[in-house]
Image 1 (cartoon, rainbow, N blue to C red):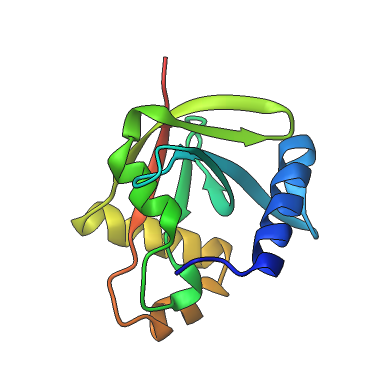
Image 2: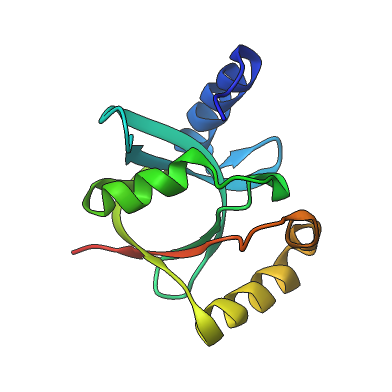
Length: 138
């Protein structure tokens, strides 16, 4: 679903703040830089993330529990070798790994313990919400 002009403006403001500070409106986020699955153009999206001890992140393609995955998820699948995380002035090339089975279930339990508000997204969704681990490259 395309973003309306107000959502695009909000995303640009959030990405700009996240790139500098790692936060937007008090929330810890990352700027997820991808290449568009259809357009081939560079894209940036502000995404809630859950840091991992190894320096990676878990991200949830929840789209607020909506009926479709967010566009950035399809971009990860189409161009997994061109994904970069940026937050607080640091850029990290990453490799996305979609989680499945027990690993996915453990990640969901961990993220719900850290951010209980996400449970509403899982309850609302009529699809299986993808969980992705972003592993630092190099």
